[in-house]
Image 1: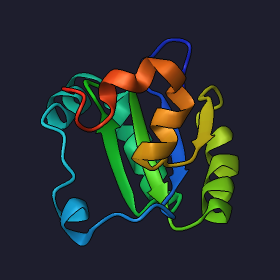
Image 2: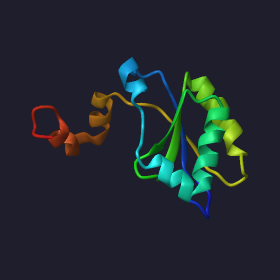
Image 3: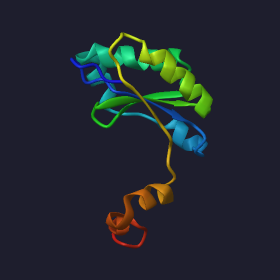
Image 4: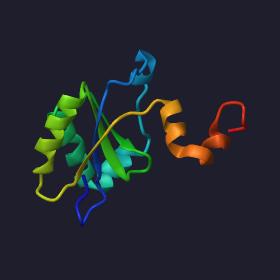
Amino acid sequence: MTKADTAANLSVSRAEAEFSDSLCDVWSNDFEAVVVRLYPEVGRAREALKEAGALRVMLSGSGSSVFGVFESEAEAGRARGALGGFEGAWKVFACATLARDEYLAALGRGAASLRPGRGA
């Protein structure tokens, strides 16, 4: 979600992609504590995703968005509906998790340097 006067974006995604247990145990973002302290709106966004049923909630990158991972597409859809009215001005984006090969296929020819064995 995005508010016109803040930098809080929220994405809802489904957890149908296979995340290894070890990956789920190490989800962290070193910027998160600082960003939440400086921008309380980001903390409110995180809490809203948790309350909407996200299995995992995290700040992406250096804080351009907050995302939640949900058990299914249906759960993500319900959360998207609930969060769309939260605070009145957030924009909610539903997205799907892509496997690496799907991501590279979507990039097309520009992804050649990212393919395994190509130096990336």
